Amino acid sequence: MFDNLSEKLQRVFKNLRGEGKLTAANMESALREIRIALLEADVNFKVVKQLIENIRAKAMGEEVLAALSPSQQVIKIVNEELIKILGSHESKLRFANDPPSVFLIVGLQGSGKTTSAGKLARWLSRNGHSPMLVSVDVYRPAAREQLRVIAREVNQPIYEGAPEEKTPSELARSARRESANTGRDVLLVDTAGRLHIDDQLMVELQELKEQLHPAEILFVADAMTGQDAVKSADEFHKRLGITGVILTKMDGDARGGAALSIRHVTGQPLKFVGVGEKFDALEPFHPDRAANRILGMGDILSLIDKAAQEIDQKKAVEMQRKLLENDFTLEDFRDQLRQIRKLGPLGSLLDMMPKVGMLKDLKDVKVDEKEIGRVVAIIDSMTPRERDNHMIINGSRRRRIARGSGTSVQDVNQLLKQYSQARKMMKSLSGGFLGKKLGKMKLPPGFPFGDMPR
View 1 (tube, rainbow, N blue to C red):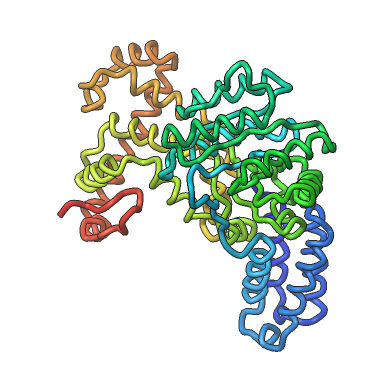
View 2 (view 1 turned 30 degrees about the vertical axis):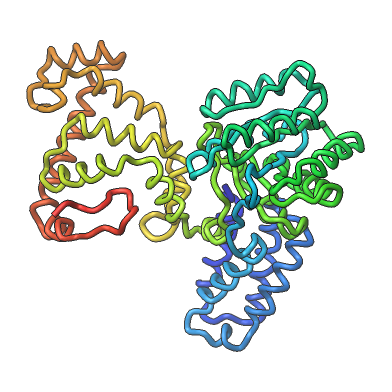
């Protein structure tokens, strides 16, 4: 996400740091490079023009030019202006005073609309709501079947309709009634899509809007289509009045032009981004965190949010105790790997880390997800006694473990060697200054590792 733009902007700032003093001339040169970087990232040209003008107005001030560290001042200004363009603050979902709140999910065919409806249902259920899904696409039976399968996958109810309900309006009205009768507080209406915007589609959506009075009209767009996504969002807003945008496939979009353009062009906020194929790969959009990622500062807050949701707090506290007491077994190691896998692809986790200082080379790290699977398979092939005491694993046991896990003896040897080295390192740390500090540390509430029992 934003990889290409981030790399180019960091190059601009590096060049600025190489200048002894910031002048009008080298600032103009930097602004020219920033403009090119934004345009190459497929950011809307009007957005680029506005952004450059705002940065120039602030960066050319006497205070910045005379600053002891002018390049840092420029980075601060670029960060502030990016946040403004992206929306200043997180835009949360709106709910009706009288439930169920109706969310119309709209967009062109192939944008990921139906999958996003399922992802949003899962997100809502994990954040204190009880959603129901309904598809009102009466033209494509496959679309309704797809939502039915997704509803089953995310374990959320779906209204499938009676045989006599033939129109989108009939299905939607009955689904809202069913939602109210069953105590569901949100109804997600997955509407029909088209390959392009046409009058028939818009008339149908306007009728649904008039009948349902939705709390949200969420436009789903594919981030990979860049400015086409922005144009479609703008057209839908002019004709329907959308209240927010969900951008799918953000994990595959290294440019980020749609994300940077959509709010400025439509005037409506980007509310969620899809960052993977799994149903938990939907994240609320935070403009400040996105700006930090663009500038190579990482997104530690989103990483902590993800960890707080996925990691078992009791297990985390117990793991901290075991690490401090050097009582970390192979079974514990396997459990930690499983916890990490819950957070999503390792590549996306590395993307959230700051690309500065000792972490600046993380962008070049290639993660082999299969390696984790191999390690887990090797440990699974051990007996409970072997996992508890690796010292008893002799040659014949290693051959048996390799056969059982579908790996080689060399793979087993490598794992045991790395595990032994890690234990030695933890022993030296836990007995020294760091161990004493960790033992006294009271970690903040909600942090993945919890509070140590005293």
